[in-house]
Length: 212
Image (tube, rainbow, N blue to C red; front, side, top):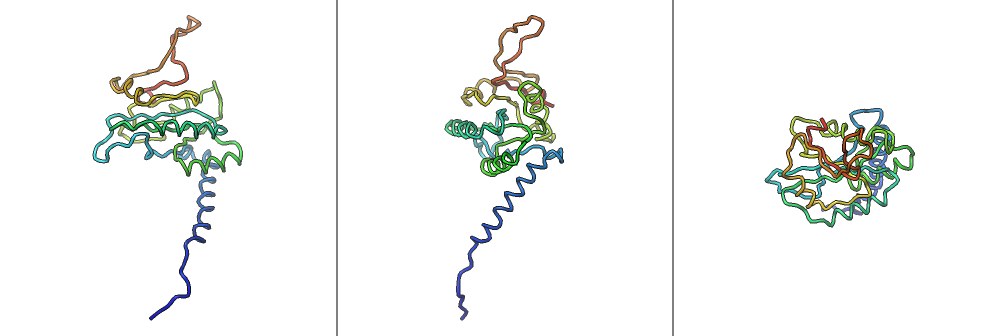
């Protein structure tokens, strides 16, 4: 017969490993610009609507919300708002928050923790701006973030962080639209007749072929 004086506990091991994991993520965020292939962070497994494991989704949308690192409270409100919407059967809508390179050590720490918790952030190799090409950087980066021969999404959408969409109504608006050469949103006549009509920035969708 063998006896043991005390039972082994994993708690100290967890306390040691947790800071190491956090430091690893902070290192990746801090050095994302040094490795072009790692200038984004995203987890496609989290979905607003969970499709049946036996069937592929009939419709796939990347719902990219352009925001800035400082708006953590707004991101939490947005997450809660979309979490309360009912899942749509056989539909995959991936809600992601998109912003540019982190500037401060404080941002790197808190964003790393947020990424570990929610897995819904994409960081691009760019400088935060309102009218100098952030939207273009987002669309042009998507094929690099999701490479491969198979089309990962039917549509890619850009959304402002002060806009809110009914995802079921959005799906109804998009599901019958062509999967090629489609540019959909809300527009208004231009003030200057020298420019063609264009869609307003609160939200518009492009078919996958237009972001390639």
